[in-house]
Image 1: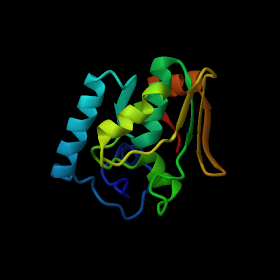
Image 2: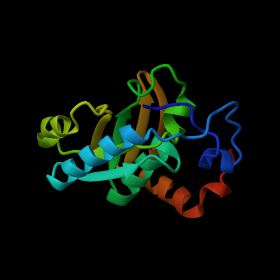
Image 3: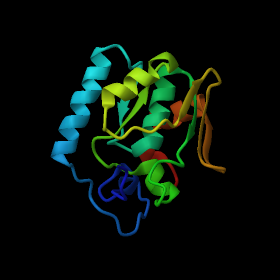
Image 4: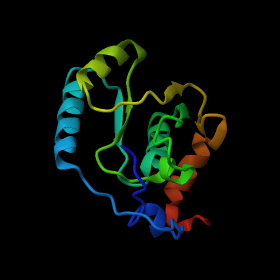
Amino acid sequence: ATRAELAGSHLVAVGVDVGQSDLPRVDLAAARTTFARLHAAISAGLVRACHDLSEGGLAVAAAEMAIAGDLGLELDLSAVAPEQGALVKLFSETPSRFLVEVPPDHAAAFQAQLGATPCILLGVVTAATEVHLRDGGTELLRADVEALRATWQAGLDELNF
């Protein structure tokens, strides 16, 4: 679940006006189930990498994972909160969400391990050092991993939004 939960987010902290938005709220029962199932998948060796979406949302998690692995990403966010706009898809801080890298040969076992916990296949890791995020046919972000690294090291508060 990705909701318009941008109030109090890092995006707001760097001065972006997000309009009327809610504070992130935790669904304790769903969180407990999600964490238990994800932990089991990790323990079973089905997960190569995992990053929470709590600080900066999906866009920041994707950038940080690409930076850490020095690899690229090709992600399509069209299945993420289809009723929401790009700002929410990229930066929502709705709790208990993760960006998970799963080797293709473990995908079915990973989905089985998650059971009824919502899971969306967003894309693939690439050898090209570029992060490409799109929403169907609309490009949302295309950035070189080294440029993302430089921005990340400089700190978000130095960006001019």
